[in-house]
Amino acid sequence: MTTRTTSIPIESVAVSVYRIPTASPEADGTYQWDATTLVAVEAEAGGTRSLGYTYADTATGRLVQDLLAGIVTGRNAMDVPGCWSAMVSAIRNLGRPGISSMAIAAVDAALWDLKARLLDLPLVTLLGAARDAVPVYGSGGFTSYTLDHLKRQLAGWVEEGIPRVKMKIGTHPDQDLDRVRAARAAIGPETKLMVDANGAYHEKQALQQAHAFHEFGVVWFEEPVPADDLAGLHLLRDQGPPGMVIAAGEYGYDLVYFRRMLEAYAVDVLQADASRCAGITGFLRAAALAEAHNLPLSAHCAPTLHVAPACAIAMLWPIEYFYDHVRIEHMLFDGALTPIDGALHPDLTRPGLGVELKRADAARFAV
Image (cartoon, rainbow, N blue to C red; front, side, top):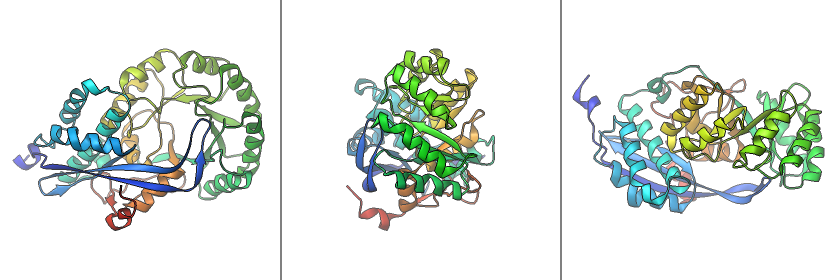
């Protein structure tokens, strides 16, 4: 191995922020939005530039610029875990959850991409693949949609060969059963139907809804109650319909959060988001923790970011192909993937994450 591949100092870290309006108003059981902010981080070393990102806000970009860029600049680009540990130490007094972990996530992704590019390898090859492709589920079905819009979107994913779809519920609980019924009619009897309440229900209400949804073949109930209500999640897992998976974890920022959820027997599938849980490094550690509890992990949102690490983990549930992020990643990234037969296949002809920022297209959204 040459000196070039054993010690290459990180020369610079740059940040850019983009605010992209949604195609139409979007809402789930507890939140509504009309734009999504992407924070992009580009690191340079050895004449190579990389790309990482998170979905957060401008404050996250500012934290990268003002603090984290200086922490990793000058460190060895080959030592990504060492850079990660230095960033985690640097944000001690700011608090690990929230913006700090999302800022670390963007830098960490950029550093994994950088290392793979320096070695001229796809990131999935650098991490070591356990599978050739990652199955996905189409995700959207926002509560702001009309029934016709909901049915068109879900049926569209089925027509594209995605055999599992997820819809939002919880804004108007009295309407949710009708929406689930309409969704089932639109996708047919064979497609797996998943629902996500984003913590909108209380415990007994969620349990009642779970049994009602079971009639329409719902196989996944995500955040039926707030994710911090571990007793409530356990109740749903223990007393919900047979065959219905209880899932949560997308708001986990560190291993302590995930460990508490797993030790409470709160979920059948743990979710993690590499754009929140301190990057690809944090995502892989969450996957190892889930495996130690004999449970699979599913990736939340940001599909471009998750393909390589999801290919590398041992116990995997299909990952989220989230409409809002899919739209943004295809708009702003050259090389963003499209599912083939319901799975994302990493492009082994491209190094790193396999994407490049479309600067001209992104410029009009710059903050």
